[in-house]
Image (cartoon, rainbow, N blue to C red; front, side, top):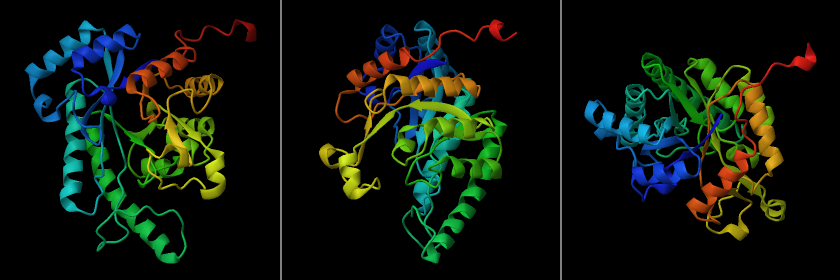
Length: 322
């Protein structure tokens, strides 16, 4: 298991400078945005797709810093009811899969997307309750849309032998482990999760139990290392479904935090240990979205906590159990 970094927060710096900075911190695995909300500051998808020369330049740069790419990231909404927006997101995702295959990167991270609540609606609709009954009907309509799309997308991923790692994210159709399993069961094993615990904490989901549940069917394709702090003084008044601006920190029910500022080092040791139990040996890709500190400080503090949690060696023989 390696500590990695999603480089999006460092997008104002050229990739060589980012690699040099991360190498000095002992980080040699990165996740690169190539479309959608992550943008493409460090990997302009259309420039590198089907371009042997540009791909060779990237490989040479990565080799210089002994760095690997854990995933390409393109988070967007391919199920959007606006056909133009959905088509753009679909193109980004399909091309990201193709580019990943060409770069020998085995994973693309993304969202499931979220449809409208019906064929005539114009905006996505996140359904959180089955009553009144039209909400349950809308939810089933959404799943019909999603399964049709993702069945075809899963075939595209299989054709390129690339895993698609869906981040379980509120305001998307797949936002918790059971919806993730439902989509996987309806498609194929190339569809799994980009396990980001930050979205699960505030929903009240036990992160290690979620790892075990998804690990039973080998559904964790990638992991984001991001923390969340729930502020009980605010949740006692408003609960956790909070539309307060992320930058109004004192009044939010919860905030995304750097690793260690939502849960302590012992918790992250449990997360790492549970991931090892279910056979995950990929990257822990740090995603900085802590509004209380800068990207560099947030990344460096996260690396410090994770470096004391991650095992550097493979398990030895359990000689004491023989």
